[in-house]
Amino acid sequence: MPADTALAPAQVEVEDTAALDMVGISKRFPGVVALDGVSFHLEAGKVHALMGENGAGKSTLIKILAGVYEKDAGTIRIRGRDAEIAHPSDAIRQGIKVVFQEIALIPEFTVAENIFLEAYPTGAIGSIDWRAIRRDAKALFERLGFDVDPKARTGTLPISQQQMVEIARALAHEAQIVVMDEPTSSLTPNEVELLFAVIRRLTEMGIAVVYVSHKLDEVFAIADTVTVLRDGRHISTKPIGEHTNDTLIEDMIGRRIENLFPRHRGHATADIALSVKGLSTEKLQDISFDAQAGEILGFFGLMGAGRTELAKAIVGFDPINAGTIEIGGKRLSPHDTRAAVTLGIGLLTEDRKGEGLMLELPVITNLSIASLADFARLGFVDETKERAAGQSYVDRFRIRTPSLNQEVKNLSGGNQQKVMLARWLMRGLRVIVVDEPTRGIDVGAKTEIFTLLDQLAADGHTVVMMTSEMPELLGLSDRIMVMAEGRITATFARDAATQETILDAAIA
Image (cartoon, rainbow, N blue to C red; front, side, top):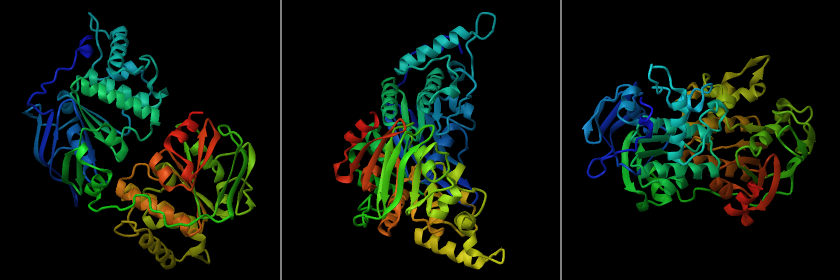
């Protein structure tokens, strides 16, 4: 690529030519119809949201556009011309850049090297022009209105800046279509606003943006149009102004939800289920709080505030330097997870695939692993008793699985989350710490998780909820504690908390 190509202004025919038309797209996998005659129309200079529950077909449609999968049927037209996309390189040549949720950069390379990875600018004798690489990278970030050091090693950057590197790569390839797959899953509210500013700048350049997200508030904030898929079929395409939260959810899940945040519990009891005093670790400073039986205690903080570190410390996972933890009036000693579970507290980890589940093992094993002693007799597991208990929780939590023998990796994110919740209840725990309980799951599954958490509190359990999602924090919590830089900076009663006061405390 010539050194000045990356700086050429985007040229898009926006009069009567769509940026993209996917017509009648179908894709089958063994035993599954992933897409069934789906059509998708994208206009230049617009943000088009693509929504649906897990398994709706969003990822399959994106991967066909990216050249990861080949379509079985249908037509793709780019700027009015038929296009065949059989390989990722075809997508790049057609001006399509997909920024997947898992950032696809080489962490050991610099920012500039990653941007021009496919075609480095060269000098007169054919050698790589490193000065031009850095200069052109800097110019691309200036066009985006975002400051990233071209010489920085990519792996040292926060996720928000790595996303900007991916977007700069799109500009370097003169992309006219940029697809963003769950781009805010690891961003703070301030970083989300910066991303939105960059997206608006892209549309001002005439670039079409496909925005894939489960987050309704973001879609209403950034999208011009929204398309909903369900069970591999096209359900609706409407200007965002024609939707409300309720109508969008109804299109996504096929039914109306009367109350996204159910509340069937009464007031918490005076019984202290969890007491933390003077807790300090490498990242936490003098944390103290009590959690009552029958309440949902919400913790909020921006990225790096210490929410996850606190969750892991109070269940004995991370070491502590000072302080005490009591569960049901009994001190957690020794400070480890085995003692914590014995006293009745467990963690629903943020990283369910890396830390919470045994993905290759069946549902029944993932359910019963913490309770095997309850099913043992003379050193052997009573499988009949184990499976009866497991099936009772599958039925109670409405875990959608063909059988108890299904490998848990094949379940949707929401059903995987239910398996982890059921595991701790099967173990008889009374205090459940949930870290980002709805991360990566669709809106239908979210409502089920919300209902389960509400029911746990109604049954007298204590739920300590760490979340970066403001709606669920305000919708579910009885009390809210805000963290910043490893400290608790504010505590709010449910009725006294607002988004503004919480954010003010989070940046204190």
